[in-house]
Length: 373
Image (cartoon, rainbow, N blue to C red; front, side, top):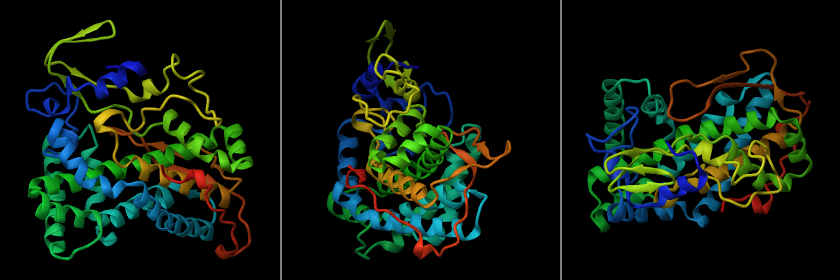
C-alpha cells in the first residue's frame, strides 16, 4: 500500500502498473469488489482510450454546465420537502441519496421510476463483506436490466448517455458487452461515491464551526472549500489494485513483477510533506491537486459532475438553513459498514424553522467560479 502523495501519483500514472493485469483470475486481491469486466476501469492502453473517448463528450464542460439547472431544481425540491416537514431530518434519506440517483438517471437516460431496481444491487457490489455468489447474482440482475433498457432504447435516437452508447455501437463497432459494462460502470461509479461525498462534506462542515461560519460569511470561497472537503474526506479511500508488469523501484521498495500495489488516496491527500497542516480545512486554496478523483488515465471521468453536485447542494443547503446543526444524541451520525467506499447511512440535522413558503426562501445562485470545471 502506497501512502506517499508523490509515489501515489507515480503508481496511478505509470503504465508498468497495470489495471488489466489486476483483474485476471490469478491476480492478488484483498476483496471480491472489482470493476465490471470489460469496463474501461479494467483496461489499459488502446482499449481503455477507445472506450473513454466514446463517453468523454457526455462529461464535457459544456454538457456538465447544461446540467446545473436540473441539479439545482432537484436540490430545491428536496430542500422544500425538508423545510415543509420541519426538523429534525435525515439528510442522507432526504437529500444526499435521492439527488445523485436522479441526476444519474437523467444523464444515462434511465427511468427514475426504475431507480429502486438497481439501488440496492449497486450497494451490494461495493460491499466487501458480500460473498462472490451474492455479488454474481446482483451483478446479473443489473446486467439483465441494463440489457433490456438498451434494447428498448435502440432506434430511439435519445440524446442521453445510453443513446450515445447505442450510436457508438453502430458507428465505432462497440460490442454489446462493452456497452453493458460501460453503462453499469458509469452507474456504479457515480452513485455510491456521490452519496457518500455529499453526506461526509456536510458532516465535516457541521463539526468544524469555524469553517462553517467562514463559508457563510464568504460564499465565494465555496469552490476552494469543496476541494478541501474532497481532500479531507474522500468517498474513495483506496484505488483499485494495480499489478506490476515488471520490476519497479518504488521509493525504497522493490516491487516485483506480478505483485499488486494499492494506493491509499486518503493518506496521499493528507501527506504532510505536500499539504502543510493537512488536517486543517483551508478555504484560501492549496497548490497541489488532491487525489480524491485519482490520477492518470483512470482519473474519474465524472469528476466535473460530482463537483457540480457538491457545489449546488452545499450552496443551497447552507443558504436555505444557515443555522444547520447536528441533532443531539449518539444516533445522529451513523456510518455505513463493510463498503469499499466511505459514507454515512444516517445524518440527522436540525435548524430553526422559518414561517415562510418555499417560494419566499432565499435561493442565492452559485458564484460563477463555483460551476463545474
